[in-house]
Image (tube, rainbow, N blue to C red; front, side, top):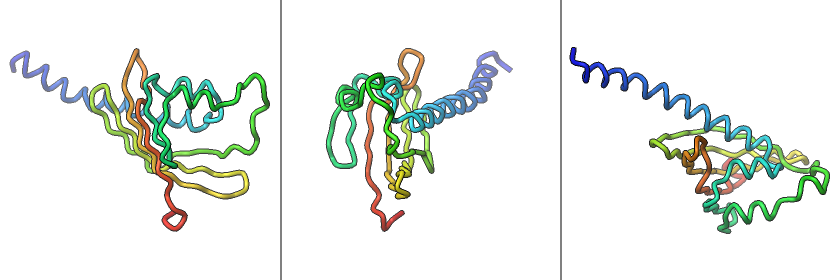
Length: 145
C-alpha cells in the first residue's frame, strides 16, 4: 500500500475520535456553565467577546451587557431563588473550528415550577478553547412541555 493511502486511512479513523473528544469538551463546558450560571466567572469564560445573543423575549445584546447585568459576586450573597438549569436532548455538530450546540434548557425554579427553552449556540474554537459567539433562546409554551 502506498504511504499516501495509509495516511488517508489513518486520518479517516482518527477524525471520529478527535470529534468525539471535542463533543465531550463542549458538553462538559455546557454542563459546567449551566451549573454555575449565577457566577460571573462562568459567563466570562463561556461567552466570546463578539457574542450576539438573542433572548427568548426577542432582545438582542452581547457579552458586555450580560456581564453588566450581573451582581458583583464580592458585594452580595448569592441569590437562593435562582433556578437550577440543566440541558436535555443535547445535539452537538462539529464543523472544523465551529460547533453548533442545540438543546432543551430546563429551568427548575425554587417554587417547583419548570420552564423549558430551546437553545441553539454557535461556538468557535479560539486560543485553545471553545467560546459561544452566537446564541438563540426560545421559550417553549407550557402546553408543549
